[in-house]
Image 1 (spheres, protein in one colour):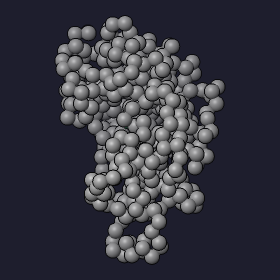
Image 2 (cartoon, rainbow, N blue to C red):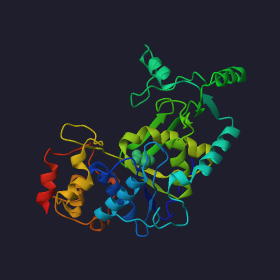
Image 3 (cartoon, rainbow, N blue to C red):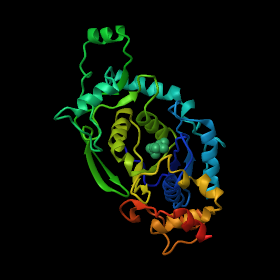
Image 4 (cartoon, rainbow, N blue to C red):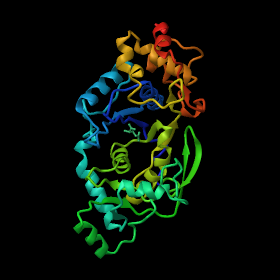
Amino acid sequence: MREQHDDAPARGRLAPSPTGRLHLGNAWAFLLAWLWARSHADGRVVLRMEDIDPERSRPDHAEAIMADLRWLGLDWDEGPDMGGPHGPYVQSLRLGRYADALETLSAQGRVYPCFCTRKELRELAGAPHARLADDGSPAYPGLCRNLSPEQREELLRQGRRPCLRLRCDALALSFADAVAGPRRMTLEECGGDFALRRSDGVFAYQLAVVLDDAAMGVTQVARGDDILASTPRQLFLQRLLGLPSPRYAHLPLVLDHQGERLAKRHQSLALAELRGRGVAPGAIVGYLAWRAGLLPAPRPCPPAELAPGFSPEALPPGPVVLPEDIGSVLLALG
Ligand code: GLU
């Protein structure tokens, strides 16, 4: 694995998907990613809009997300609104780069068409002895790995549209996560051969994110620990494509008072909603900073005050469970 040089200027990124409005869980992850970058004297922050999925992404969400981030007090040095030397900073404008990398991997004999439908894979996963990935989702059982050219042609003739999968090695990848500690996982545990392009032609997150992080000189990635099992896949792609690996910090998730992950239905926890109730951005930042162990008690605080000395290694373990009346708690903070 090529490691980034320790003395390279730190470059972090905020990589929202414009599929909805930001909620407190997003604010937590973006605040910590921002603090990690800004804790370095000449640390830079890149904003990248991950609108790779055209069905789920909307330009008005992208605009609203940038407004929410600015409202919180998080800024960036390069991004869709201001440009920069590594743009464009919008995934839908980078498709040619993803296609080129897919070609490179194809030329290595690494890519194969997979005709399995989701339904077929679900049924197989329900079968006894189905292989499960680390996160409990079904691992791809390799059905289309060794189809003959004739079999492929026949399936194409039947009108089946394949996704493209990466042929993975039976390999364990190690990385030192700044929050989760040293990790070693096999690609099999992470779900086996994974998709690089969906059957509808949309490039997969794994491919896009690896290429963009490298092209944008990102040296450190902080994101929710629900993505931990993607990291060995991304390390493997970096290895195949000769790209450097950033440092990773997989952050504890924010949960509602019932222990549920925050989602769109948690409308009351959307930043826009809280702002509408009169909650101040400093109250959100200060509350989250307290939960991150950065303040001894919650109080309104701008992000920049928290940056000196910040280190993800020092974050308390485990998820952050919000109280039921979090809106009132934030309002009371002033
Ligand atoms: N756009 C992804 C998300 O919103 C970010 C994933 C990543 O940080 O690698 O979940």
